[in-house]
Image 1 (cartoon, rainbow, N blue to C red):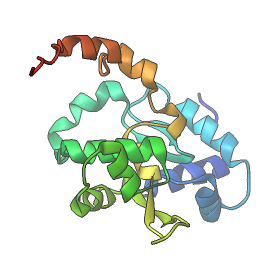
Image 2: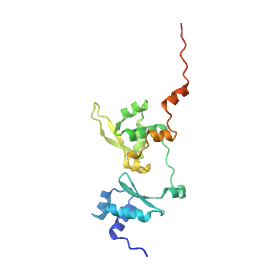
Image 3: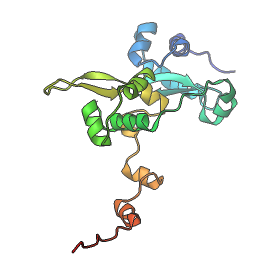
Length: 192
């Protein structure tokens, strides 16, 4: 017979389970009071390991989720997310890798203008937010990613974003010299 779960651990589990959004340790303490919250979270995660739900930490915030190997069972009940445009994906990647970043800096990196609607879509999704203003003439708004961005993409922190070598290994980037060779540039003709 298993041992009873301590009341404090049960309270931590109830607070995380009942929350509509992931909770920080400070949020949990606000619900259950002072105690070994991290120890309780570790015990809860161990108890749920290998079951139909798991307790995970993403960006310093804790929540329950369905294990990845069971996600296919729930796909029918999930609403299909709206696909982001290529421009929105580019802007999101720039913000994630260069934050905090202004709209002008995003446009300089992309080489094209960024529609205000693109930033609005990312803010509505809850993946970016204004992070203040740059201390330069005009004081432009700067943007950064949110904890919801980390949660949605399964990242513990921005350090978990793939690097250049990871992207190249996945076939998402071509080495520059290969790309130039593929262009097969021909010498310009003389106009004498």
